[in-house]
Length: 135
Image 1 (cartoon, rainbow, N blue to C red):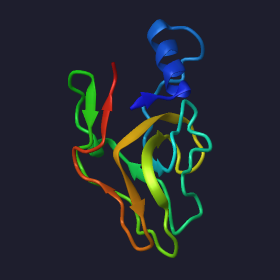
Image 2 (image 1 turned 45 degrees about the horizontal axis):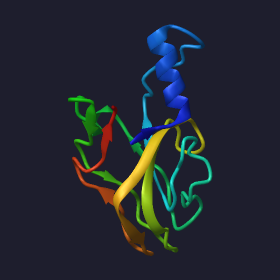
Image 3 (image 1 turned 30 degrees about the vertical axis):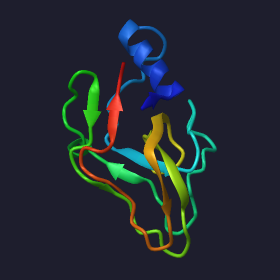
């Protein structure tokens, strides 16, 4: 996962004690999926908002284990709702935000394989399959 601009700035300001230290643990994070690279801002990256019942998936502390060697992995399944009424398209990227819509983009990256989410599919990251690496 590549950190987004928001998180990069927040970490640097926190570590070096400069700027507006806004770094606090979010009570809830949201995993999003999309059809194109979220870049550094997480804006306009093909997230299927308003299509076939799509919503970001809320994740809590219990969804990720402790970090080890600069890596944090999901320790529980992260399952989205069913794509009801319309396909979500060819999903190849993920993002992490601090809100269910809009919000600050923490980072994201490319999936190991593109998956077409058809009407009726229920996308899921199985436990251990969403990995965030720093370094």
